[in-house]
Each structure stands twice: as structure tokens, then as C-alpha cells.
Length: 71
Image 1: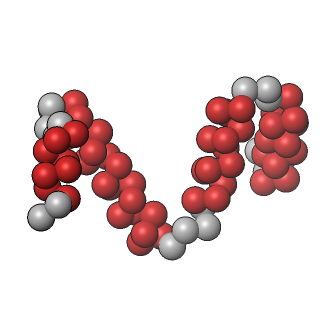
Image 2: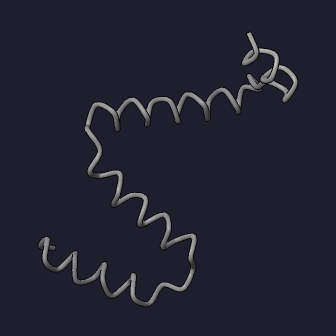
Image 3: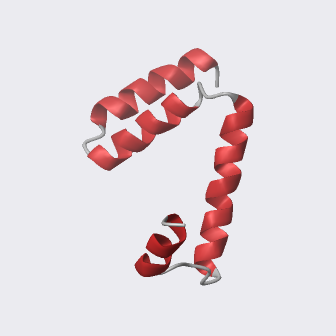
């Protein structure tokens, strides 16, 4: 599939899409493609690490966050 064909298909799919969360996700993805590649990689790595921390139960309570930020 050529770039022109992909763009046409995406335009058609976006035009038919009614779910605002899907449209917002597409919007976010397209905005982020303009980010500096190094920054993009760092943000992605932080997000993945955060997901791992959540799965492993490495979280702070609201009180712990307040205590840590008021140092």
C-alpha cells in the first residue's frame, strides 16, 4: 500500500469514526510524531516503566505523595 493510499484510507476511516476517544487517540499519536525522537523515546520508556511499577504494586498512597513532595 502506498503512502497516498494509506492517507486516503485513514481520511475515510476518520470521517466515519464517531467515538471521540478514538479520535482523540489518533490526534495525540499524530501530534507526538513531531516530537524530538530522543524526547519521544524517553517519554515512552517512562510510560512503560510506570506500567511495570503499577503491575508490580510499586505505588504510593496520596499521603505518601504529599509527604514526598513537601520536602
